[in-house]
Image (cartoon, rainbow, N blue to C red):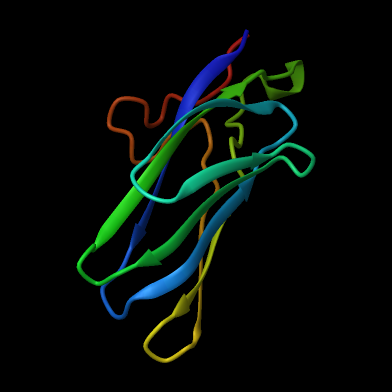
Length: 130
């Protein structure tokens, strides 16, 4: 049976304004983008050929210390996944430009999986059941 999950991404800024922000992650074959999402700013796109979820934001000024999005995915696990923690996304990679010094900004967040670390209700309950 399929299970739906919400993925939450947050960009934080505390040094200089950044621009041309892109955050992207790839969904595994067993995970589909449902099309449901919430965006505080910018836009979210799903590149189906590459299975990539992409969040683009023109700029993040210092006056906005953090901003985020959330999107829903649906996992349909296979028999080989029973008893395992399953990845819902790849690493999430952020790229941007520091508008003060022109330098590149790159950050990577670990993949999200069914163990839902950071979720007080779902954490530690992520093993796929038959």
